[in-house]
Amino acid sequence: MTGDLLLVPFVAGLLVTGVLALAGAGLFLRGSVWQALALGQWAAAGGVLASVLHWPVLAVALLLGAGVMALLQRSADRERLPLAVFLAGLAAVTLLAANFSQASLAAAAWAEGQLYFTGPAELWAVAILGVASLILWPGLRRVWLYAQIAPDVSAAPPPAPWLRLVEIAWLVAAIVLGSMVLGLPAALATLLLPAWGAAHLAHNLRSLLLWALAIALAGFLIAWALSLPLDQPFAPVLVLVHTGLALLARLGVRAWV
Amino acid sequence: MSSANTILRARSACLGFERPVLGPLSLEVPAGARWALTGPNGIGKSLLLKAVTGQARVHGGQLELAPETRTSLLAQNHPRRQPWPLSGHDWFRAMGAQTPEQSRIRALMDQRLDRLSGGQWQLLRLAAALTNCKGLGPARRLILLDEPANHLDAEVRHDAIELIAALPGESTLLMTSHDDDFLRAAGVQDHPLAEYLHDR
Image (tube, each protein chain N blue to C red):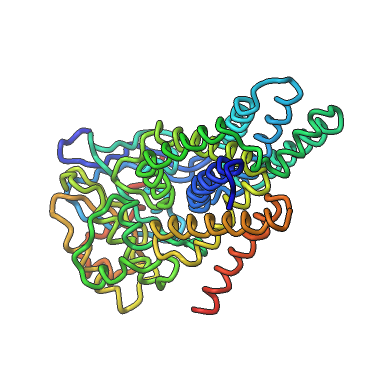
């Protein structure tokens, strides 16, 4: 199917897809879709900037992504401010690409994705994030569930502040690594669309996660199977496949109910 | 707290969000009480409950809970997102609540929250608000219910009254309602809020 050359990209892509699906379920429950767009765009801006300055791409992307998330967390505005930050990130990438040839190449790489060129370093980073996701899952679930109860108030103690910080750091890492491996549009599609489709099929939090994982992984495998033999770029194919699967889930439920 | 038996005390408290809109208000709620704050719309009953949980601000005076008191609140409305892929079990887990014994509530536990009727959703929230904080002694619990009779249809109204009436005697209940029949059936005392307001 893949040959030795494509084994590392395939495994890295599969792993990061699983992590993004989990993150997408959390973002869906938190209603933080615009935050994800802004964060992803600034991670891309960080990657492009790093290419111009010859700095480590992952570190700069993580730093800018974390900065954006810290800014957005300070505001109760969940739509307009994240949208403005997203547009500013888009403008920053466009300006960098217009003025520096390296930036132009890097911007194209972030937009189209570099899955086929993913190496062992990215695979290790994604594998570590995958293991961290499994370890953090009980805490993440607690934070997401607790976020649902307002305006009601529980007498039970809220999740510890450090757990909330860990959730944000994990989310930043998932979106930045996902964007590096799959490309920004494909990472955002994997983040947002499977969870949206799963929300129509699931009957509780656990099945939301399982459906999101199943749709995301199915989308990755279908896109992989289509893009290679048809000699098409992977990222746009993945976006279209995820869109189709999410709509199918939505329409399937509507027909069934 | 002036009295060891007081779980909530307001002393010339002025409450509001951006600016004070209620008060000065002075009252003492004894531990184990079953109080219903009554009065016309807009007098500030809900605001007082929100100030107790920290959702509204105390602009002047004092509003104090007895040490180690844990508070839960059933808000007047809890709009549900569409879609909202959570079940009754998920809601109870989120609230840190015990699985209820009542068969009518247990029957709701596997259903999606966004597919419950308005009355079922209110009953489920009420049950979770009354039973949350597992392992905490009832004497340390202050339960705030803001218009719990809202949205309850005839089918679930009796279950809601049963839930309230079955609260352990040591836990304290402070609620608001315009529904006199509901208050009587639940066995709570009527306390007009206006009686606790005074001039500056």
